Length: 235
Image (cartoon, one colour):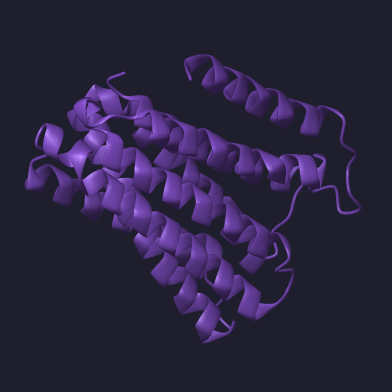
């Protein structure tokens, strides 16, 4: 099992490098990576998460955590496919955000189980992190995502999504700061938040620049990898 996991992780890393190295810039110069190969690395993370979940035992204390992380990664892959086909469609953008919100909900369920109980995590510690991350999320939405004259359904949909993402990130950061075993989880969540900040600015404010889509994906897939590999904590 460990050998297979190591192979899958190696293939995942190589796939991301090859997708960028052998791709070509698109017409608006925002993406260089080979789209299908790049997106396939999200599916590869689903397989990695599933393999880890199957290998976790009750004795490890991370069986349920790994299961819900794998569910969250699986839903995230579905959201990736929706967002890839969204274009300028308001319905698909809303569907993509809603699907990612479900993925974050699974991550939250995962973290409130075994990871939060191992310490256990002090509620005051979490509330402080939550207040800070919600404030950061609102600032990101206000300055980078919100379109003053844009449709309310998109503006407030993005705000609601940012609230869920910020809550997930807050719990991950709180766990990482309280217990160093969760550093990959905390870093992964922060990278996920950074990715969505850039993506939201790109989609809603139409602020595109060279390689911006590759930056979004790089932050995103590294963040997801951190969350998925955090299920190995204590191994």
